[in-house]
Amino acid sequence: MKKDIWIAGIARGHNAAVCLLKNGEVVFSIEEERLTRKKYDGGPLACITKILEYTDRLDYLIISHTTSLESAGKIDYAREDVYSSLARKLKLIGFHEDKELVQVHDVSKLHHKMHALCAFYRSGFDSAAAVIVDGAGSMHTISDPIYDNTPVHAWEHESIYSIKFPYEVSLKYKHCSSRNAVVNGIITDFDSNVFDSHDDGKCIAVITDKGGIVKAYEGVTHILGWEAIEAGKTMGLFPYGQKNMLLPPCYETTSKLPGLLNRNLFSNYVPNGSWVNTLLYSVFDLNNDDAKIYDNDISKVQVYRDLAYAVQTQSQAEMIKLIRNAVLLTKEKNVVISGGYGLNCVANYEYLDALKDKGINIYVEPVSSDAGTAIGAALFGWYYLANGKEKHKDGKTLYLGPKYNYSKDQIQAVAEKYEGKISDASYDDVVSLLRDKNIVTIFQGGCEAGPRALGNRSILFDPTFEDGKDFVNTVKRREYFRPFAGTILKEHVHDWFDLRGMEESPFMMYAVNCKPGVAQKIPSIIHVDKTCRIQTVTKEQNEHFYNLIETFYKKTGVPVLFNTSFNLGGEPLVETLDDAVSTLSRSDIEYLFLPEYGKLITVKNVVSEKP
Image (tube, rainbow, N blue to C red; front, side):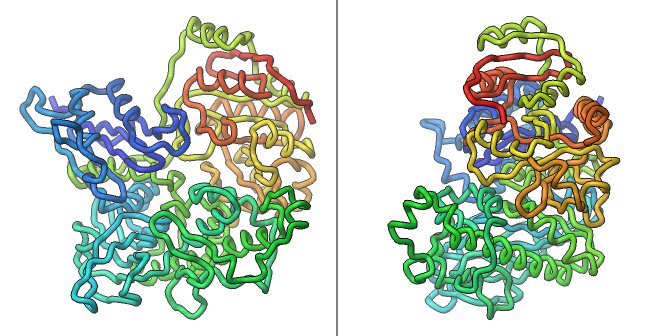
């Protein structure tokens, strides 16, 4: 009897995660933050223990990050790395009954490659160019040939790979930067083994001190008052801005290379971020009267809104250049995109229009954050180390979280813990609550992988109410300008939104234009630029969520529901039923719908008025 092959890929850094495979199929993929309740949590120790619920042995443990595993420290006395040691202590690795030693692989120098493999295998393409763009990938030590081979520490920003199924990977281009790089320019026919030990030996390498596409975005996000990792807030603010000729460009305008920072505007502190040099430009000067007018909220100052507009529009233009270069280098018409910038829904929509004349097929990986490298590492283990051949359908769903089967008594216990009441509920009952201007949450199945709520861990509202955005932002404790997404029955999407040639948008990865007249019908989910981050849904993809929206449609003529992530500001998506009911108890949200059980939990803790 052929034994099962169990593989775990782990991502160590921020957005730490574990992906478990059984014979090449995803069993579960989950981020550490969902279990520990700390946003962007690192070190997937809780995730590793989750493996025990599915298997008591691993055949491969693949560890991914951006720096060497040595940097994670050693366990006292045993002198093992933290993650292998935990797996050993849990008896997941070691000598099994067949006397084979579990293979532990550190792929921390292959951060961008793990992003690329995640996107490629989930895309379903037989071959593709992979374009990876993030703030700072793996660190590489490069000898400077000009100054007696002085070592320079540089971090990845942009990479291009050519990939063919099942496992033929060639690195074609890589841009790295250092705070103090002496080498500035292009080195052709560079030995790519410096970057990646599994490639064909040649690539175009660019080593600069100028940072990359995302570094500008991080700098603007920082000056707006947020952490660099919160760049999604800048994306939400950008349409409040406009083109401002007084602002300097974010990127070098004279370079043929995409994404080189304008070092007059930005200081590059790779890998940690970048800073806007506001003191060099009088356009950024604010007097005391300005501060009073805007309540010290810089997001309300027009020049800073204009800066958000500038970095959004200019960064997506640099990305389009990079994608075109990827097509030229690889001769591929299929392009997969990952790395942190892949979560930029505004830019993703622009590619569809800018590249349509080239016949390019775009797949943007929904788990483009570093959590996706856990999936990439696991699939690397299957297709490269275990020599897997069969193409799996991993990209057809994002409901990859662990499944929970609660008993009636368990549901009752959780409800009582937070003084909640349980009642029977149908789709009609939930729609009636929504039509009465109530927020209703939904909890079912496995949690969505990635940051987008897709109907398993969602906050729902009626999108037809004009002031719904302000109301839900207040309840969620988010900034005033943050937009909301919507979920629409797939068969109606082309009547309401312009998908620019796409048939569907099941993973909510594009901020799309609405058709004329739509903004007036569903104002609470249409952003100020008349776009909406939309999810299409079919009954096959999510039966309960589809049925709920269909019921809403039959009662209202609107086949769309307001859909946002089930969390409060600064918190991760809820993972367990306890997380869900706890969130109700700490907010103005009253209702939790459990469609698998036909139940509604109500927690009365409301202090705000409905819109």
